[in-house]
Amino acid sequence: MHTRWKKFALVSVAVVLAVANLSCGGSSNNPAPPPPPPPGPVNAALTQFASGFVDPVGLVQVAGSSNRFLVLEQRGTIRIIQNGAVLATPFLDIQSIVTSGGETGLLGIALHPQFAQNRRFFLNYTTSRFGALQSIIAEYQVSLTDPNRADPTTERILIQLNQPFDNHNGGQLAFGPDGFLYIAFGDGGDAGDPLRNGQNLQTLLGKILRIDVNSTSTGKQYGIPATNPFASGANGLAEIWAFGLRNPWRFSFDTAGGRLFAGDVGQDSFEEIDIIQRGGNYGWNTMEGAHCFNPPSACNQSGLLLPIFEYNHNDGSSAVIGGFVYRGAAIPTLQGAYVFGDLTSNNIWFLRESPPGVWSRTLLLATGRTISSFGQDQAGEMYVLDYNAGLVLKLTPQ
Image 1 (cartoon, rainbow, N blue to C red):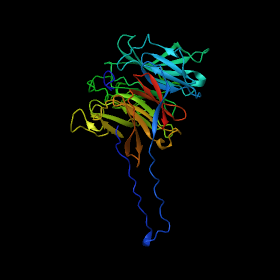
Image 2 (cartoon, rainbow, N blue to C red):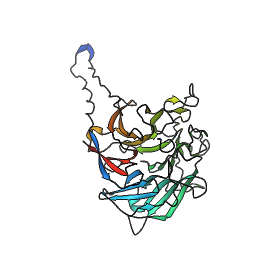
Image 3 (cartoon, one colour):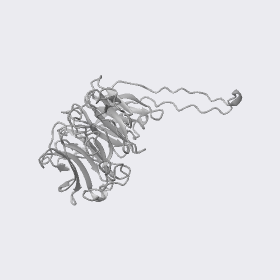
């Protein structure tokens, strides 16, 4: 996102042409079956799910519970939605240590895969309590006596990362299908990545990290998975999973296929969606999306992974909000599509892949909402957070 949260139109539909396969001699005793028809139209709406939040930026469902959700408020609080009602007492209030405003604040939460048993969860937030502005990755635990309260005294800091500017902090963290914790950090700012952190393998800025929160490596509060691309630390920091990112505000794993989708907020012209791969270099700041940035032409693109989709700012867009692959049952025609949005155009789109490696975008909703984040429940249904109105909305059939 650009500083101070600076950061749809129906684009294309795949046309399927059925071609008859003729056997030798021109006969057609066993013709090939026709290709399946494309999915029907997707009719969706946003229905209010909960209200009364202050600058909501994240939503997770409590594992094993169909009626409990946690909502992150940027100022440094976490609220509980239980049986459709917002509880008056916060789950956690760490406003006293969170530096919030613009692109700083409490930015991400991930519940441990065994949360129901070990009560552990992890936060990504910014703070100035140690002097300079830093991003913090910390572990907390829920109270032993009250499941609706986290214990702030249980904080265990895993990572402290100095931020050279107050924008491009990233903020997402999530557990992958492999049980490891993935963390997104932006390039640290300012405009254009003047420090070239995206391409620097000796900093965690401009990267997606992968760590093991169930073990420790020498000198660290976490373990380094042996399959990390720079696990030895010889050619890059051992925590790095992928690099060359500008501000990956939101990423998610497809619960059906395991692929890691990320929305990486662009500079002045292009927003991009990437599928993150082990050791992948996504080009920033050599490239913005699929275009040369520094230098503005004839840049060296060798070894770079281009986005699966990009879009420009011509429709008023300015900051992609990464979403999820829809795996719910309420909107069958949306099944398997990647749903995402944009902060300033207020649009929600979806991407479909057909044939493999070719993605097309379709407008789902022109919402009029200030979309800060998406959420997904255990059934695969999706939610949208309206930052300005303080609402959680659910994507429903129309």
